[in-house]
Image (cartoon, rainbow, N blue to C red; front, side):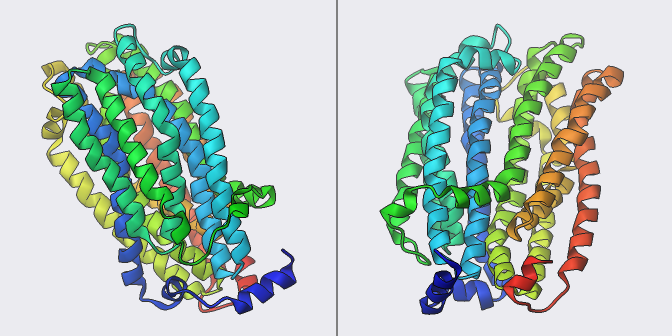
Length: 476
């Protein structure tokens, strides 16, 4: 559509109630409306794997939990591809709504959804064919391998459904229905929690039962999410909108590339870290399997705390994007500051809980040896120490995405994952052994936080204050 036609369409379009709320409702109320369902959705997403680990740990043992750790990178790869379109598409959708470019907003939703189906289907086929080599690549030991293969063959069929839920939820939240997005995730989590003990303890299916429960639960969430497609409030989707417009998809990918790089780099680094835990663990009193398994549990426990930051900043993104597109810089700044304050409070509370009740939390995953408990408790406490700084950095990255500054967001995500964490994993263990592997991530998180805050201060001054036209805001 030409610029003239876009302008005409904007003039004819009557603002929906959701758009009026984004433009004028009190920021604190909007943050609650958008962030609370977002937090619940992110926590629920983390719970999928946590629940599996708890029931597997009690029904199978720590080797079963080790299996979920080496299969998890396959899920991370699918999430990386999905986040490219979910975060980028959600940010562009909000910007286009603010600019009243409704045709591009529609094509953003349809094209992003179709692209996720295509790329994750290809990934699933490749993962099914090369499952064993992939597990080996991510540090799988001989004693863990049979469990990993059994778990993986049941998890892979659920990748497409859960990724469709993730990408649609980004648009559902931006459309003003964060509760629907929350229900799509929550229904699957509840279903998974019910099926896990039935399949593991009643049917005695072991890790296969946990994988089957997760996949069936993801399919339930899929049907809830796609049922929203004809019910969008700010736009009306047609069949033509699901034909990808590659000019729009390029812009979506540009906005989502920082999230993708962050997730993809973490995938590579997780493989490197797993192998480091196996290598340096074998040289310690803990052996290779204990560090590999305990690290997997630590990573997934930390995801619960990170979910508060991710949910809050993701919830704030539509508010920031819409108002930035509309040129209302005062509301952009107010939204960011409110969301950051909420993030810090939530993450501090979560960190304190995990630091105080560390052993009790580890015990949820099964009763193991004193040696295992010693390492798992230490590992979890170290990781939790600096998570709040990682949450603030995540908010800064999402802010740059929301205002259409993908390059800054890409720089910050690459900074943490590649420039800082990769050298830390390679260098620290040479001097500190297994302890160096444990501390590599916290060191990278804190350093990345300091640099990200510097970037934010510079951008904050460029934004100025008050209201501007969309064209002026885009130049800030």
